[in-house]
Length: 254
View (cartoon, rainbow, N blue to C red):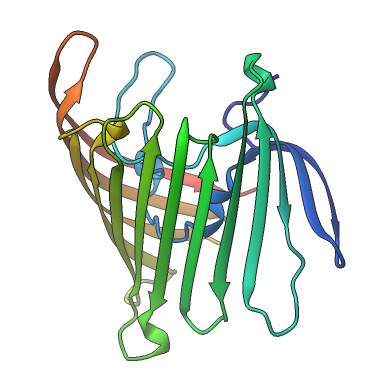
């Protein structure tokens, strides 16, 4: 069954020769190349956010989800090959369906401050296909500019959609040196066209925030963000949506 909805739940085995297998409910392979998102708290994902009492939608492109009845394989590390390769298979048994899906991902990282990734999945996060590409660069490795930049581009082809959903993310994070403890500020912009594969349903989102390492395992957060979507289809009509969130909190790492 679906078990803990907000957590990966799996049994696994790992070996230097054949890699790692995880069986259960796993984040999809799309997540394996997403080191671009810097948002925290309410905004820490690309897609829809909801609480227990009501749905408060921050409308963006399709994102990685936890997939029940899945198995994901991570290839072993090969000397001289700076790639992390993953492959995933899933069935829809948890919902009583016979549908199956699969995904693959590859992340290039030599440890030099630049990464690039590409991933594809079918019938896992949506009913259809998603292809995603990412890249990050740590400018501090190349010049006197302590800024880490990231970019993500994605195309989702919904089986029922009239158009392909296209979206991109641009992010930046900069450490602050004038504090007694490590701290940083960040900003991220999301843009999506043809939300859910529907013509002219578009959204823009901007988030700014900061983090402060109060202790080695306690992080203070503060952020603000706005999401605006146009021509969003509802049950009987089409309209616009707007979400503004201001948040703060403490994160404790066990």
